[in-house]
Image (cartoon, rainbow, N blue to C red; front, side):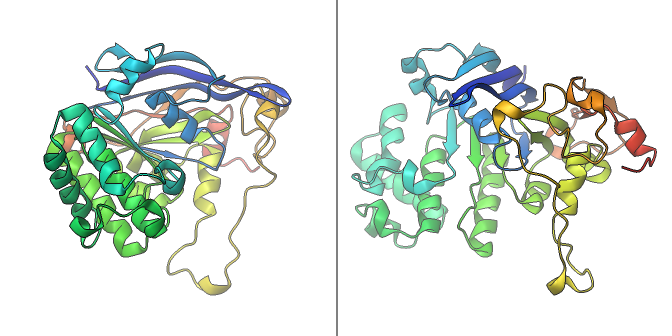
Length: 343
């Protein structure tokens, strides 16, 4: 049985212009020790999907579908039962650490809290473990800084403190929403290496949200490409990166700088035409219709169905030797695009 099973997850939010479908029919599974990346522009539904896994959606959000952890349905659980899971079996590194950390409590108390609450450690044991965790994520003089408050740390240090809190109880599933934001390249690599070590040591599953395609390529085995609240392409990372079957995936890759390209300093990166529509304006058919150069009239009204692509015979990840995720695209015109038809 997979550790995490998400089936037809849909999230509707109330906006000033009426109800809007923010996430539409998202489905995926995640095994123990597996890593999953979510990529896409801001507002595509990545963070909402992550919040749904944690049971932290806005109060008036309407949710349909299923989220199962080890076979246990999470949607509809009481807040008390969700609190028993959060910080224990489920943990999340939030995108903005200053708003996630409590400004009136010391960081030692905040890192130690899940250890006392879920593992029943004494105050002294929890502080000692908190010191170890802070040292492991790169906080200098951790023992001396346990009584400091969030405002006394830099943005990068606060991000590392959030990661220490999330890892405190050795969760089964870690959701990391842009965990390397505000970190320099050296510290970023150290944090990513730490996450990989924990995945390997404890068979922890990791959901990594990032705008950085390089980070995704190096750190996750499978991938979901999201746009307009929908998954437009999914599969093993190397398969998606190699083929890029959906026009949106292709445009994302085209917009990144190419190392070694001639005239890089003066290079004008291509952009995706148009703007991301408001949630209430997303077409009922393909969410990328209108911004896509291959758009036909039927793209606006006909919902693309998932189509499985032929995946090259590649070795499975060492951690999941008997398992491979199929490469799936949701596009009405992918065959014409693959055949070389011009936009």
